[in-house]
Length: 61
Image (cartoon, rainbow, N blue to C red):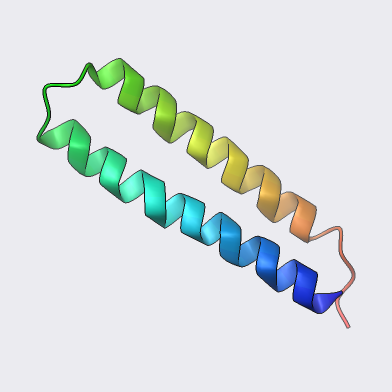
């Protein structure tokens, strides 16, 4: 089960760093409406948080 836990945490980390950093950079240097980027950051953080919480439900070996 430790494998499942590590996989979920890795996915959550990729979501955080794979979407938050580009979104923050986009916010600095873009003409896109910033509210959409804020929404994207918000949802990415919620999804990553949920994944991390779910990963702790799996028992450690």
